[in-house]
Image 1 (cartoon, rainbow, N blue to C red):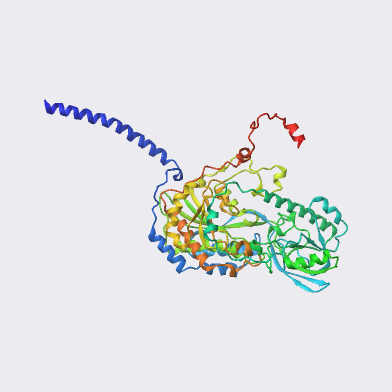
Image 2 (cartoon, one colour):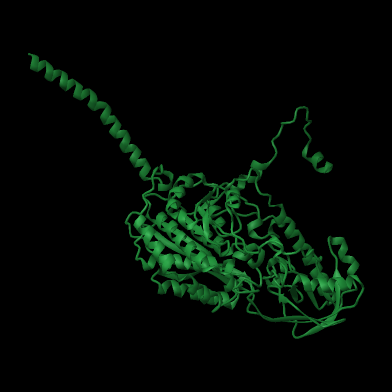
Length: 593
């Protein structure tokens, strides 16, 4: 009887415990089924990263001891030279990078057309001199897309002071046959600080500190207004048959825009869209070294007549040139993950006053070296690793935006008349994001575009979920100087195109060197400004980031999907906050303005 009773109790207990276990198993099965339908970036991330330190070491040896980054640098900067979008040189650069990627073992190396850009252009020769009251040879270069002077021209110099539309009328009838100085003479301060600097611990800590107020973009709209006014002046100059325009070069950090350094970019033209035939600059435009500009300016202010001679020799190559990105891959090998992608890149185009070494030849050759390192080590990534070398970046991120729009998604833009006057990157969104299926298949994009300096850390682009992951990744790299993680949102280059459609896009924190003081968009942006050790370190660090992303079980976590169409609404002042305020009808409010 005792054994029978014990058997009965045991059976009851087994049935009792089996019921909740069965329910739990069923619930677990349902959860697993639901999770399997989610992209892996939506799942909980592991607390501890599974780092392959053996691969870290192999990448470090190949990247630091057997670096070939300067071979690529000389081939691109010396062998090809400046790479203005739409130019024959950029076409050569696209083809050269494609062929280099194929030669190192990448698959599917090809060029992707991102659409029509505008006019192809090349500077052949530019010289400027003062003929009287003294003779002097001046440092100048043609502004991008400047027309030719069709031989040497000579004319009296005149300084035009236009700050607003009303100032234009006072020069009517006074500009025919003149060479026009357009722009104020700025102060040329002593170069009392180093032009070449490395970030110290205090400065790096400041870069990591998150700003408490968002950066204002009002300066961009002011800049566009100045260009619009300059365009109106250009119409007057053309109607008056002026011979040419001379613009003063801007300054750089620590007063670096002196001593023969001139900065030649979109600020050195008579309009933002000067690369389009319908907005072509109507007369030759040159940028002049500030000291040379100052001499002529002071003579004119003292009422001394000045005669200038110049010759701008440029060539156009068509009105409807297309832009192309260079794309190549290391195929993924994991049957479940090979359709997912990790991207690395930088922009291939440059301005035309030098050879575009630090902006952004550096980012291009670093990305090439990343792919060479991984190919040399015969890495078999679980996910596909894809390189993208973009063009049209300097005019508005055209190449990366075009690629992202084709593959991942886009935000519809406003077509209001006032918005259509602005570059695409300044136009307001007109609706929610349009997301394509491939958007769920890319884990991250990594970008280098802050000069030749070594990598000191990474900007998270306000994606806090990346911090515990990247903190573990950089721990074995601290002896290479990689220590900083900044949550802040950094702007101004191609990672923004990915971030804008909800894809983790990252720009690295780099040592500043002489990037913003002397080389950025300047005639000094040459091979000599590149730092071989820094570039080898950057390629090594970026290769490790790319490798880790390709090998993780899960894609990197994402921020919530952006809603650009709601930004104005979210920034609008709150209503009914002020006690005693009387509600004013919209019509009255408009009239009161």
